[in-house]
Image (cartoon, rainbow, N blue to C red):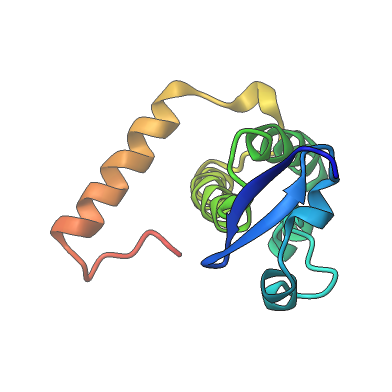
Length: 129
């Protein structure tokens, strides 16, 4: 038999050939815990609600970031990053009428931070969700 390695998965040690494909490295228990056809690289559904001029670069940025995240956290990390970026860009669109990249100004970020700090100090004030 070929040289084999011992791989820990789902609390079970599985002996596998060194040249086995990644699908063969998962024990039956681990495979049954996975959602069928779950795409861990799926983009958040709300990305489709973002204006087209912002959607395409945001999509490419999220894909770039996904390459550096571990598989077990990629879905959560994608969702969290998208939500943070979406919150900021929505603020810019609502408060400054942002509709093209050339409009973006550094003071917008300062205004966003001030508004967020004001919301923390005075929760009754709302800058939108």
